[in-house]
Length: 364
Image (tube, rainbow, N blue to C red):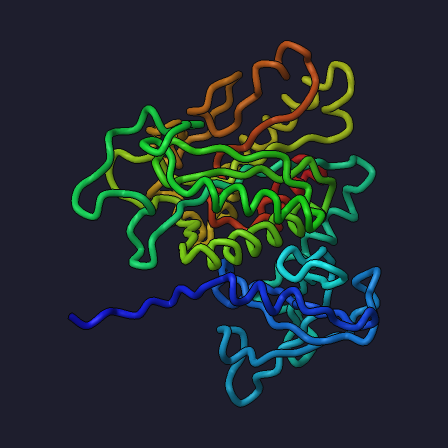
């Protein structure tokens, strides 16, 4: 009987080569960027003859934008500008990961470079010290795009025992999750936790609290690490907000937000003012909160599975079925933050952060 080859390789062979020493003045720098889809990430590596300490020291590079949905073949050079630097958890040592902004041949931003505009907003609102904490939900898939660990024919037991579950019959892929968590900590990302979610093979990690633009930088690099770690396990990551139809939970990017005034004593007054402002711009936020201008969230924000209805704005204390939730402890302590539960799992964190800050801090 003929055997079928798979794309998986023996990682112990790679480890033998990774143990080889490199000269002290050499650094492998991996440039990471968001491609034309607005969701997928691309990366390529170059050798530097020095070990950088800040992104500003890194040379601008370029790539073939016609192969990433970011340029025409007749004018395909797109430029990479490093903006954030992290330790490389795969190569270790002095090697670096570089998150980059993308610019077209005329030095204008590419359509999926939402960081530049977000940074401008964060700079304008810097005196209010906006903080963010984002909860990234995602789903593990086999390479055939079937949910990881699910029966190939049929479904697992209904939802109930899986959220924060323990045991091989309740969670799938914990080793991938733990590897990702450790990789983020090593790299310098402000990752604050992880847990199994309501649907089996669905997980969540949290990034923050981060001030200003750092939130988007850290979350995008955490997403890169998630895909890269899962690659080593021959598993696929999806950020689809409703990866399985039917009576299964979707996936979101719940976003916790506060200003310095909200975090101060009696900050609940400022939190309530912020919610009032949000109530007047619901449809603008819905449009900004997924990759398809609200179309992806239509499948998720149904009013079921701890979601609000996409068409209605609502707010409440400890109510996960609302658009905006005030955590119970925040209401009791009368200071803290609000949670926007509307962003979908595939939302761009730069756009989410920018839209929240425009509405609450800048009244735009």
